[in-house]
Length: 289
Image 1 (tube, rainbow, N blue to C red):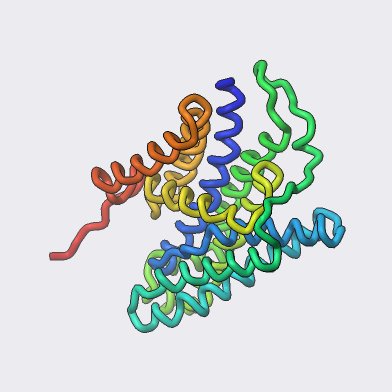
Image 2 (image 1 turned 60 degrees about the vertical axis):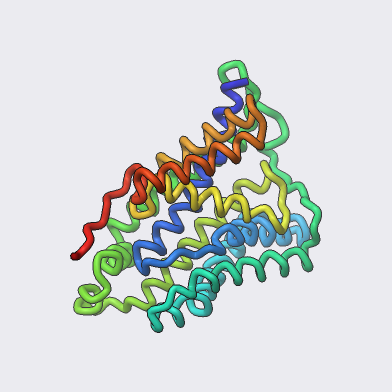
């Protein structure tokens, strides 16, 4: 049983990390967080389901169109719920992004319905025997794609012009402007990328969790918990924290129940905030006196 729980936790934890990486990207570039990130997970799953299952499109075109829609959603969130308040030096973006998430969830509920629906996958039908435990191939695919995508994002940040622009903006807005980088547009790109990462998580998790209008709320909260635990400014810390959080969560739920899982998970967030507000892998920011 423990092997099966570990594989299940690894799949879920890698998706927490992927969604949390979106928090890291937007926070690094703008010192803001998209609190509708969980709804981006839901939109990814719902749109992919509507195209692939509802409209009968092949899987690959369905995924590509879905990711394009997620990028547009990220830009919309930045322009409507973040940019106006950043210009006014207001933290109202926090409530604005939450409000957009609630709107998105309720629109999905009206259009898609309240019932959860199964997302078909040939890799989630017949389990493989791995170390004596039954594991669906899809549970192996999810962390493989998640880790591969996180590595790809890291390489893109270091080796592409767009990635270097994001890093420059994360370092200093003023310095980035001096070398000709459009800071506002770069922040918009960061939000688009963050939303796309969440959408990928939604598509990958759909065959394992089923698709519903409310599926993203808890995932978004737990991904933010992972970002806090790992350190919201540390991408590598977020990856480690996400994987460990997912495994511990699955093992605790398997042996002690889902209620205990939620208690321990969010109690850990409070403990980290009390002892290391900058996260386990983060670095404290010096304060000017």
